[in-house]
Length: 97
Image (cartoon, rainbow, N blue to C red):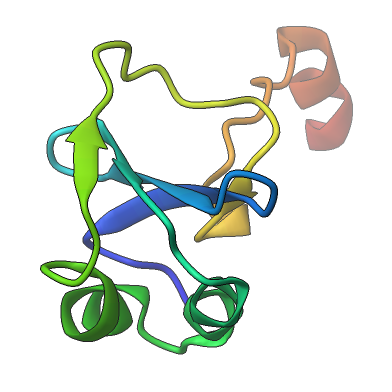
């Protein structure tokens, strides 16, 4: 389910760090010592924003990453929102024929 709050997230099971990128600010917040079970429930949640607000926000220490660029290898909340290359003019013309 696409989220209006969260653009993507990534979990590192070795460090138990959950990184969350927010839609509005495009900033990354790193939540410390998040149990794997919480990450799995978050991953499965129908509403990422609701789950985040109820079970992650105000429950774990966090830091705001200085560099907010989105990672290349993370789980998008809305796979359909991935940027794609625009079709070339030639391919668009072929489709019109």
